[in-house]
Image (tube, rainbow over the protein chains, first blue to last red):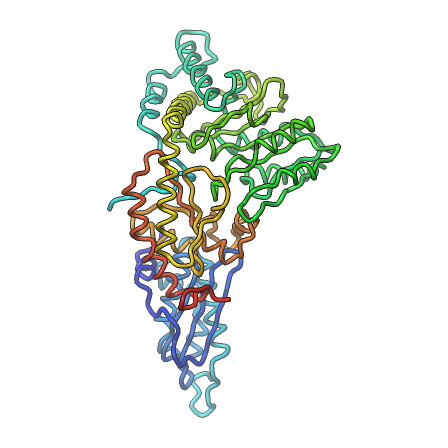
Length: 128
Length: 389
């Protein structure tokens, strides 16, 4: 029922752990099912240069968090903010209907992290 | 890939002898037990033989057995079929959904329900049953063994209290029958629910024990089958299978196999707790059926662990069937006082009559590494061996 991509990320998660020197962190929890995702990012000049995750939850939650760290690396803050649950699901060749909440929780964690990311100096802003 | 099937509380595989007993009734012995001709008589004989076998498993008379479609029907029929508006029902917080949701429905019909709490081991206090009695109390329904933890409830004491108070007593014995001796006389119950596939019989069949003289409004209306308590042409192949499974369960218990199963379960629990730090067994301090281990591995998600083990060919389940945003919290474990994190960090391993030592070893081999990998990436786990506050 899971795509091969989801299972691959679950079996061999990318970017698991805590990022030393992270300057943006976000965490989202779903008390309804116990899923808990934390993302730590290093943002420089308005761009995500490194990302790590920690997650406790179902296969899809771990796979989504893992894919998120790959996906946002190198993105501008605007690009990263545009990542939504649909994009994340597509990146993983689709999620079963009962697992779509996993993408949503990762997006919430990502947006929480991005909201706390250091502001970009106006002169070389990639945000505006 | 070799498989280890350790989810027998979800469904226990059909034993080959049961399948062989059923086979003719899926093909050439197709008669309807209500028919007056030879085919019908042949079917009737098989039906009544199965009834005797099921009755023997629980110490009942054959006339007290009503065949159903399974545990949920038995529970629902028992709960909805006895009480009337204005009555009061006593049950526990850890019952199967079939009981709890039937009680919820009754509450919408002016029936009051007391949901008794359990202690940290998952046991209902019989004294709490006595304390909850009211003049309007009609029914007490407390399960014999819990499906998630295997904890045995003090049903004999509760049955005694219900008997003294002149109340109907129903017990859901779905997870107990075939694993521990069940005797309706000792339990003093009026109703008892059984399910076929939990005792290595087929799915889609079960039985409700209805003590002689107990009036039950039938859930399913129609023909006079099952003495009018359950209409509908009988699922004969399934019933024959249930009868065969009941006979095998009687022989299995008489041969002392439950002690062997308990020894295998104990070895599993001991070894896992030795090899996995911060692990424990829910309900370990209570009497339990010999096949169920409910493990908490702090700091991880039971869902992820069950999936990781599945990839290694090991079938276990989480403490609850949680899969979506709208999923209910694992209410049995929460009722035992577990934190939400620990309730979600639970997996259930349940052995069956066919479970081998090698299957248990396979779980023991894969489990520590899987837990360690998941803890390493969990925000709930702190390096050094404890759960994050």
